[in-house]
Image (cartoon, rainbow, N blue to C red; front, side):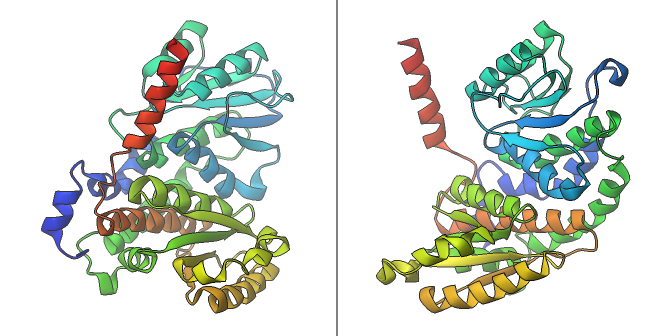
Amino acid sequence: MLDDLQLIRKQDRDGMLAILNRFDKQLEEALEIELGVFSAENIPPVENVLVCGLGGSASGGDFLQAYLGNSLKIPFLVNRGYSIPSFASPSTLVFVCSYSGNTEEIISAFQESREAGCQVICSTSGGQLKELASQNGCPCIQLPEGYPPRTALGYSSIPLLGVLSRLGVISDRSEEVRLAIPWVRSCIDRYSEHIPSQDNPAKNLALQAYRKIPIFYGSQSRLEMVAIRWRTQFSENAKQLAYSGVLSEMNHNEIAGWRHPAAHFQHLLPVFLRDCDDHPRIQLRAEITAKMLKKESGACFECWSEGESWLQRLLALMLLGDYASIYLAFLNQEDPTTVEVIESLKLRLKDHISG
């Protein structure tokens, strides 16, 4: 089925694959996005960074947290919720991110950030957040319109890198991003719908996860974020339950739960995300844990990152999960773009507020 291009086009009514197939172009365009009008000289030294976002709008912050890793010399937190931490102050740089501009939690976080005197920079394609930024004189990164937020990872992350560089929080990473783009193109070519299942890692992963509940495990502070991304993409695109965990934390609690109800473990698929630069003890833990879980579930899957630089490997794994989640949607006979249940929930919340 996954090699029937006519059937794929029929199920992919809104062109989710077409968006993903040009992710390399999205990275190029993201490097050129205007960062908003602000003067670095007028912003006090940044002591900590908050990225406020939900869903796809938070994935850019997650990605940067994993990519920048130990190169960050100040705290960097992705904040999902209505409120911001009490430590937020005028020395806090807050990215308020909502692709639609109408995410109610983010509107609340914007207001709290302003009240705390934080340095606020908005990132949106429009909506209420864009209006609030204009009214309050906050710099606003204008994102292209018309994308499902979860497909706009390049737009939601790369401009933030530019701001952090301009403020001296990190070194300029634009050239590293440019150098990664050809590798991203090669990954797209490997994962695209035109490559048959036997030669396509993304289609193979989707087939492995079909009629299973995948549990994605990643290393703490590195591939943990990719595991979360895969979980959310499988849920939103494929309309399928998925879970995520982190090594080595799961070795201290969750692994004990792989005992009951044993009769249902055949429906679970442990998937370990691996990177050559993970801590050597994490590498060993992953190998031992995978063998233990395979004994319980009857199946286990490993996905190694590929590429020369950390950025290349991170982007390759992100793309692999994105493509696999779309192919799984086709296997589940679902449209990967539509998310009626999320829109229904938003409407019910809105109706409740309006009384």
